[in-house]
Amino acid sequence: MLERPQIKGKSTAAHPPLPIRRVDAIPVALPLKSPMKMSGITITTAENVLVRIEAADGSVGWGEAASAPTMTGDTLGGLVAAVRDHLAPLLVGQDAHDRPALVPALRRALIGNTGAHSSVEMALLDLTCRASKMRLIDAVAPRPLRTQVKPMWLLGNATPEQDIAEARDREREGFHFFKLKIGVKSLADEIATAFAVREALGTKMPLCADANGGLTLANAKRYIERTRAAKLAFIEQPLPPDDLAGLKTLARMKRPIGIDEGIHSLADVTANARAGAAGVSLKLIKLGGFITAYDAAKLCRKLRLKINVAAKIAESSIATAAAVQLACAVPNVDWGVSLTHFYLADDIVKAPLPIRDGAVSLPSRPGLGVEIDEAAVERFRVKWHS
Image (cartoon, rainbow, N blue to C red; front, side, top):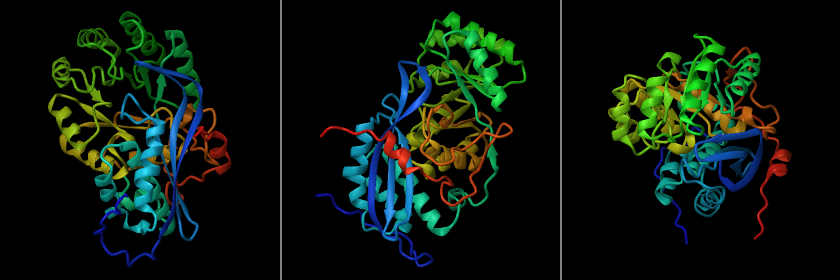
C-alpha cells in the first residue's frame, strides 16, 4: 500500500482549506498541422498527458506534459501510470495550498518521472492560483520581467526552398526568430540550407540550428566551421547529451553552443556551463516543473548563460501558458522562446494563445490563464483497451 507523504509545510491559515477530492491522468493525442522530423524520430501527433485536479468545492486546475521517450524517457503510458498509480493517491484528501510541502514529498515517493511531476505541479499551481485569484507567475516570481514574449519557429523541411517558403509564411504571421532542424539530412545539404535561409531572411533575422544530439563530433566541427558566415545565433545540442568532452572541444571553436537534451537538473546546468556551453534550453518536463525551472533560470544568471525557454513538440495552450509565464519571469530570453501549440491542428482550450504583432502576451486571468474545452479533451482522449 502507498504511504501518504509526511507534510511539514507552512501554515495555510491565510487561505481557506482547499481539499483535493480527485486527480485524473488523461492521455490525449493531438494532431499536428504537418509531420515534424527531428534526429531519430518523426512526429505526426502529440501524445501528451493532461492532469486534472478537482477540489472539494468543485474548482479545477490543469497541467500537461508531453511524452518524450528520447528526451526524458517518458512514454504516454508511463506518464499516465506515474500520475494515476503513484502521485494521485498521495494527493487525494490533501490541502492543495500545501503545495510547497506536497511537491517534495511526491518527488520522494516517485523518483525521476519529471514529466509526470511537472504536470502535477502545474495543475496544483493552476488550482491554487485560481482559488487565490492570482496569475501563476505572481505566485512564483512576484516581479515579472516582461509581459510578452516573441516566439521562434522551427524549420525542418526537405529542401531549402520549402524552408524559405515556410519562413515567409510565418513572417507574415508575426514570427521573427527561426530555428533550423539539423542532424537529419546530409551535412552538405544542411550547410547549404543555413546559407540559403540566411540569404533569404537577411542578416538581421535571428537564426539558429538544433541537432537534437544527432551529430558526430567530426560533423559538428565541420558544421560549426562551415556555417560561420551564416552567423547563427547558436547551435543547440550538436552532440549527445552525455558528451561533455566533445562539448569542450566545440566550445574552443568560439561559436555559441546551447544545451537542451542535456539539461535535466541544476547540476546539469552547472556541468554544461563548465564544459563551455554558452546557454541552455529550459523545459518544464525535463526539470520536473515550474519551480525548478525558475531556479535553473536564476542559476543561469549567476553563470552568465543565455536562456531559451521551450515547450516540447507539441504541447497545447495549457503547457504553453506555463512556458509563457516562465519566459516572462526568467532573467533573459536572449535565445528565444519556443511555443509549440502553434504546430497543432487543434487545441484543447477555448481560446488558444495568439500571436499579435510578433508577440504572445502573458495571460492576465488567474492560474495559467486559459480555459479548457473539456469537450475537446474528450475528443482527443486516447482510449486504451484494458
